[in-house]
Length: 227
Length: 218
Image 1 (cartoon, each protein chain N blue to C red):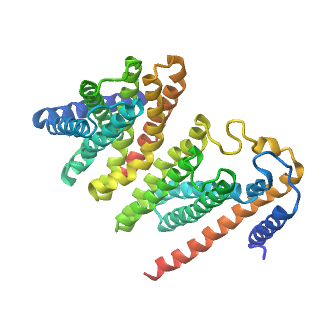
Image 2 (cartoon, rainbow over the protein chains, first blue to last red):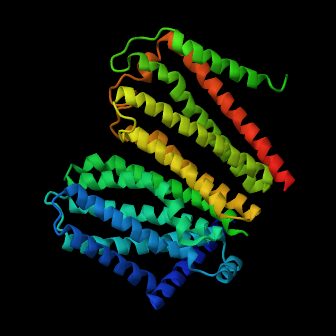
Image 3 (cartoon, rainbow over the protein chains, first blue to last red):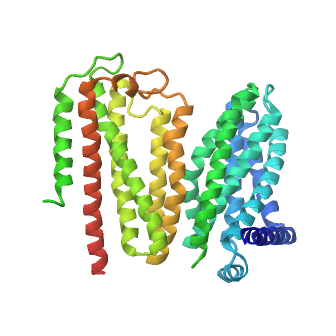
């Protein structure tokens, strides 16, 4: 029985992720919009900084850009859809499948976005010399996963509260700050070119936070979804 | 009287710990000196805050399953009382920091993280103001409260251990473990914690009674 339910949910997740990707592919709104956002922000930063002598600034600026880009990218995942479509999805699939699918889709979107942004950022502002690039890459991927898990749930809460983007920012900042502190520490270890064993604790902590957030969202989302 | 004994106990304990906290001798430690007495006033605030926030989580979980307005009011009044104690904890810490570190706010990790964890609860209160419909407000704010609680635990109990802080008990500074052994201090500290927790709970019950009266009048 449990296996049957799990199979059914897995099937629903597959279709929902496919639907999200198809919608995105047809409009290409989120990806292009956020990419333009990232590129123009990096360009504005270039115009105001010209060159970046400080390693710390290099790191901080990247995470600030990524933070705002990811809030904008993920806010739309629930806010954009109409009440009618919510009701339609509600009748078709289980809420667990929906939150899993949204989180998976957002994670994929965020990873793609972060990698493109990191590439562009490195072209405009060359990375500090001793940077451990593979490790920085790991930090960026973990960061995009964490942003995706936290912001997906917060955007669901904000959309149910019916108060758009303003609420999304207020609700998500205090929650994302602890994640961001660990992320910046991890990224700084990578920039300083420290030995990789130093960063293992931070990676573990980030993984634990992600699992915890995901578990809490899975438990809470069915209550939120039912009107 | 039978029902109210804990209120009297709380008042007596707080009174006792305030008087004894200033009068009974303390061990002489480097850096801290007499400011060690702040332990009796600063630390109990955080204990009271944690107890009140846990209480609010309990009623948030309960209100999700019962959907009664009463549980929702208990959750929010618990948060209100908890925020009060959190602010008091920050203020007592800041006064102490002025004398020990030379500045009210020196961006020590402990100060920053506790301020951020209060931000979480301000966000919760703002979320409540943003929704008009009562049923919906109860449900959504309960969900946010439960969602934010693990993050507060990470902020207050996990992250400060990873950062270098000047706070007593961190990074080789004399702290709780060292003077914990002093029986004079223990005699004041434990009653102070219990007393402030009881007072905090009392504040919460009064607030709850007022707000449920207001709710019934509407």
